[in-house]
Length: 235
Length: 317
Length: 55
Image 1: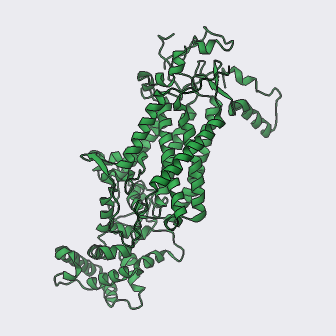
Image 2: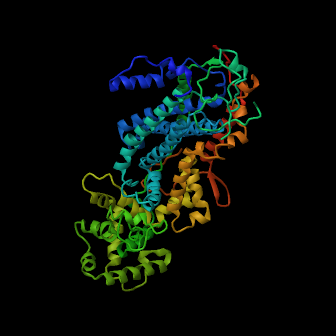
Image 3: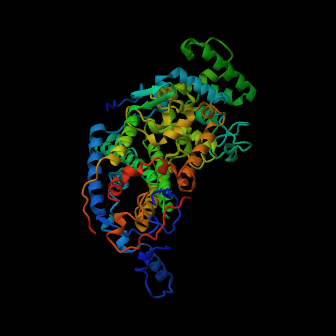
């Protein structure tokens, strides 16, 4: 973290030798507790657009919870059980909400050009989580064990075969797709989303595009060196 | 200061976007936000589920197909026997068919994968299941003993005759030299209508079999299954990839994937699938790399929607 | 959703579609897309409550 004065306060002064110690030092430097779980946000974090990331996470919680209940009972349970059908419906609607919130979140972050100031990995992990979520949702549609999943399997095989992976990612192989959907892809989504959130906390919320060092909100509260800073060089 | 256009660079440097914020702060309780979010989303999920439920159209079985559309079933079984069905001529990964598969330039990725899930449509879909019956039809030994050319001429003659029959009805086919083919297909039809064919084909994978490739490919070779999908707007040329049965929202996030199939130059190409998959992979990578792409990353500055996002901040500058 | 339990699906429930020419959109998907656009616009336009300052 170059040019970031606040981080140095958290650096442990001693020189550590163990891998464990060095890792802790690195982690604590990058993500001190008050950054991981802050009580406040910069004054510019004041718009409804900021709630959609959290909305997507809340939806993901319901996707996982309803998915766990469906997993406990197997993929054909919901055809024969009223409760099962309701849980299946919750799984569907939490997925729809997840994508709705995620897309609005993505639009918002694009128009804020939220990758500025060393936040590019946050953007990239966000895009990866969107892409992986699409694959995860697709495998879910294959597991409905109804007409829709029969048709999607028949239709989707051509694109996968055309690029030569259909034999190994066989959409008509229920057992294989089951494992992708309930183990591999949820793990992938979970890990990437967690990384994304940690990156947001570590790097903070991107300041306004036209924020200038002369802004009163930047000058009044703290004794910060003003006037000498020149930001906004165009690349 | 306002004369200098704001930077949209991804780079970390000595500017406001890169430094830790030292200005005014506001209370912002992340855990409270999460809790409120979970409650609101929970109400939405439960409400939407209670009001709208979820779709569940019953699966098509070989039995339901043979019962609802026997003529189509017999025509398809004939094509499976004669090796003229979609699956029989599909190529990798199901069988060896020369000169099929979509190419990207000189590369045929489909063929490169090799035959990984071998399917012989005549044996796996027709003669194999028939041989499992307690009294296999006599025609089966005639078929097995016949030469390949003879088989092909029987099936092709029968296919033509079925096309010409009133309503393609197998019982109204004109007299001709079809060999054992009508006997085989009518036995298979009876077997399917009894519900025995579903189990027979699925059982080819062994006692435990979670692989439905054979059954789904057989269904898809007929007109009935595809017709049902077509009637529900689910086929590729109807933006079907993103559609769900009924009025339920489907995978609307696949709109762009679906879109390319509607573009004649792409969707009509011989290698449409490979083009669409390629375009989508490229576009996904480009979306991830937007911060590095001049122009694309500068649009948010040209169209200043950010002034709405940060209207409070800009007001209090 | 009326789900008749039949061994033979005589037909698959088709939805309501809107479209112009080759462009066809199913009502459920259309609503989802409209909801996303409306949420986006509302999020930008509506005032965000509680400007509690802590510093």
